[in-house]
Length: 101
Length: 174
Image 1 (cartoon, each protein chain N blue to C red):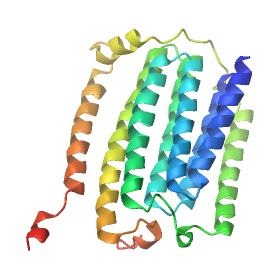
Image 2 (image 1 turned 180 degrees about the vertical axis):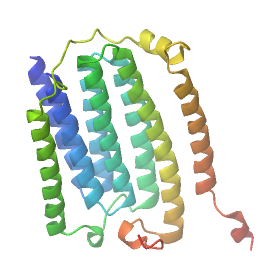
Image 3 (image 1 turned 30 degrees about the vertical axis):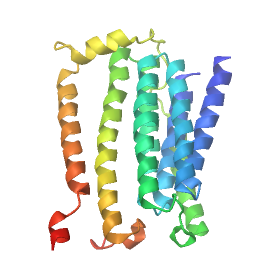
Image 4 (image 1 turned 90 degrees about the horizontal axis):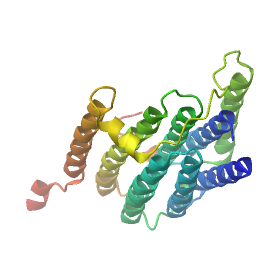
């Protein structure tokens, strides 16, 4: 197990997450793909801290902040999803087009 | 031996993540995500970061995925996507081709770039939980300011979630 292996793994995870974001049409599926991308980023932090950093503790602290921020994001996003579901009864992103995006 | 375990964990992670983004039923996808996060915790233990492994299991598996499962059960009919709300196969193939090209170019960049970014200088000592706790709250070279800012952010997002998902009481009274 070297640094390149871990970087390749996180690259694969990021690619899978982006693929999910592009192909899912359900809002919850998109949220799930974002979690996979964040997971890959955390692996990157941990691998660089383990193999290269002069101070591995800082590299171990930073993913904790990423996890906390993603928990905040999930809480707000799920509240938005609930209120949207109440209004629309569906979560298909291709049909949520009031903003003409 | 370490290489074999790494390949095993990485294979499990990649396969379960692929399942999580491609299974038609969102409920099954979330369960696959649980497995992927457990494999990530195993990888953190291989990288000698036990606190991250514990936080991964407690926060991601115990918190976020369970939360998502609850929301899936609350909104859809057991997470079933109807066939109308699937992206067509040709578009899926096109998008995956774009992503494979992106990954390949990044991979070639890392393989042939002249900088020494990916050469491991040394293997760090194991990071213990005590060190992380001291570092989080130390004022000299620690992370006390982001720690407090994160606590404020958590409070704000919790209040925001309550406000956003509250029923509109005025309409119901009328």
